[in-house]
Figure: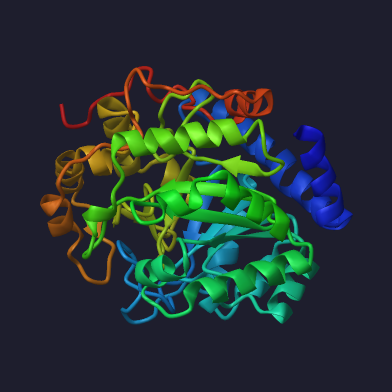
Length: 404
């Protein structure tokens, strides 16, 4: 399997793009994580990866969307994005997740990539705006990997995403990317209506045939003003996804990413471990995209490193989450998250200003944490990578409960 995947990397992209992936993402990312570990050891903090929602607008209306996509358009201007990226570079960080809304609705998105050739960008997109011309530009940049979301069959995609002919347009975006040999990924927010269609070998094989080089399964999280909780997965279904991912990693020549488990199969939360935090389209610094509360902003009149390092709200969020679960505290204990926001006077960062009421109305449910049912990695490559570069970084060893 490893040799087959290496062959795919060598033949289905080109050497320049492969070099950018290796140097800008893999090598610099490894260095960023080592610097993160050293910061933690001396009591400092700056996340090694940052996700930036550059715009709130979107052409679709997905079930369970927590982003104010129908509100007045808000975006981070390119100079502010560049300042954020440069200050992150000073901390050793060169990888950024670009999110939205739909990121390709930001008029300057390609210019972001051009301005920062020493960085690597992963763009979470529905693919509808990736025309042949846009794909050609992405290849010229060389430092971008589109992660294109597929949410089910034609019928399910239209229902899940609130549009028409959604899957056809998405698949066209995928084909445009692979035609230009771009390092392309496909992600799915797995829920009740797409679990059977997309968590199987047939789907993995189809993506390999299309030239997709990696997959990413998210677990559907019922959030926002219209949460659609009926789509949420049971603990058994979440274990089914985990088992599938572990099995396919030693079988299929395609990389499969997850963000919820370490090498031993223990659950973790990337925000609780400090691995990543999120910037909203309004510039607010949030623990993660679904925690829409903040005390700080990228527009604060101080260096970004000082903001991250001195944020008591972010520190207390990490401690609160690590104290109470290895899973998602938003899903399991929304009441505690609400208490924390009240304690700090954290502002609601949504346009709708109903995030607190949504938290209070949530029904607690299980997340990826399933005690005594861990499924360890079978692949030596994934075990090595996770043990050294993706784990809890000691976050769960002795956290302090800020609400105690």
